[in-house]
Image 1 (tube, rainbow, N blue to C red):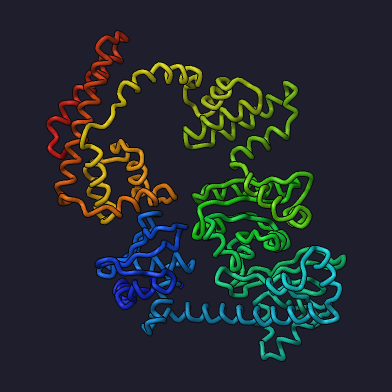
Image 2 (image 1 turned 90 degrees about the horizontal axis):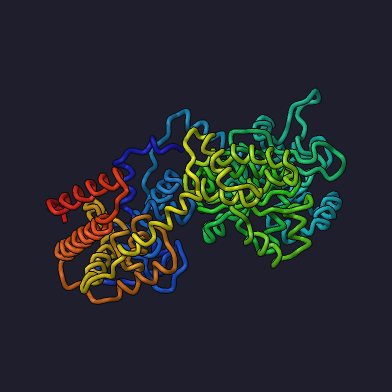
Amino acid sequence: MGIARFSEQWIERVKSSADIVEVIGRRVELRQSGKNYVGLCPFHSEKTPSFTVNPEKQFYHCFGCGKGGNVINFVMDTENLAFPEAVVKLAQEKGIPVPAASPGEQRREKEREQLRQVNQLAARYYYRNLRLPAGAQARAYLQGRGIGQELARSFFLGFALDEWDGLLAFLTAQGVDPAIAQAAGLVTSSKRGFIDRFRGRLMFPICDHLGRFVGFGGRSIGDAQPKYLNTGQTLVFNKGQILYGLNWSKEDIKAQDQVVIVEGYTDLISLFAVGQRNVVASLGTAFTSAHARLLRRFCSQAVIAFDGDTAGHRAAWRGMEVLHASGLQVRVASLTGGEDPDTFARTQGVEAVRVWLNTARPFREYQIDRIISQHDVETREGKLAASTELVTLLAQLTSAVERDEYIHYAAERLGVREDSLAAEVGRRLGIAGVSRVQNRRNHRRGTKRRRALEQPMEAGEDLREREVLRYLLQEPDLLREVQARGVTAQDFQDPDYRHVFISLSESISDERGTAIASKLLSLPPPGASWEECLESFLAVLKRRRLRKIEEKLSLLENDREGFDVRMELYQLLKEYYGICRDDSY
């Protein structure tokens, strides 16, 4: 279902017909405060309400975490829906007819729905079989893996009988055309006609993130190969786009802003069993950008918890780069000795799992340590081989700050001089390498100069910072005007006010920012208008910037370092007179 089929006029009709207070009020306990409504934010944990709904303008905003938008955004964020899904849901609630798709799209959607329905019928069939006498061997296998009846029911586990046409006969009795079952990947054609694809296997139903049955994973109970057999690609099932368990774990992932990624079905189920419910499994396939984009809708952090064997390390390496490229913060929870999350959770218990995941390392550290562990760095040859691989890795880092930090870490772990490693990375990048030792000397030499520039606020400046910030908290739209006048976070000398300004600018949230914002909003209304407060604050900034330049000029008066100093003096004077003439302050 594409957004292109919805006109702007139709979308606007849906938005205007949905009362944002009523929609949000289903999830948030709201109380009226003046013209607005306030409540505890559903997107982060807080004790003091910082979540505001404006019924007149039909938007919501949280002063704690920065989340905001219209009624469609709220449905998307709280119900984990894509834009088309959210707008259709609202339209159906209000009885607004959804524009018809093209005949071709209508036909494809009908086919997709048929496949989902036949998969659901198959899931019921397999579920029943697991509980029959014929499913005894499969139940024994599950018990051996610590999966009892309750867990098996929770994940709708089933069993495919070791028969050629058990499922086929069941579906036929339900009036399902065998051709539809074949399109769903449940039966295949042979010389003897249609036969079941899955036979003698423990069955793991696979749902999409909306909970619709789209495929299966079958685990061999006996010696049949392959050990795991998945549904082949169909109109509704693509391993590169589906994550096992997301339909069960998405709310926990969102609440914790973190997802734990494992490789297999039983890894996920065993972690669920010990209370770790923010988990998905990658279906044993390479992690794709589609997987990463899907997870990015629910969280900002990912922990890769693959098996501790060689194959697990290779899969983790591939997955972390894909996740990082999507904008997720990535860490790695390593296991040793060929352990897997399933075995670890069952044998070590709740507390050990919590500690293991909480001590996951940043993925760059993992990569560096992994390279070093594959070489005998006690020998000259091993150290040189490891350093060559490390230089290749470090040169790929696009952030200079990140590159410097991990050059330091890698040099320390490898036992080589940091300057030497930095120089090699610089050569690989084709840039002249500046010694980090020299950089640190320059840093120390500049410390006295910077300290001389740090001045306390003058009387009244704190009040001007505070009043501007209070207006921004009450009217977030004013932020654009402030930024257009050149104001940045560094212009707030009070560290608390600077923190809140950054939170507003970057739409980020933490407990400190929420507490400061709540305190400011509890004060009586500002005594001056917005225009008066802003102009007064800009006048303060002008004085501060002129004062800072004067102090820099004073420090340079007795400096005799040649051309660079003369150029710096020229630039400072130019900036000084530019500020004097600038009427925007």
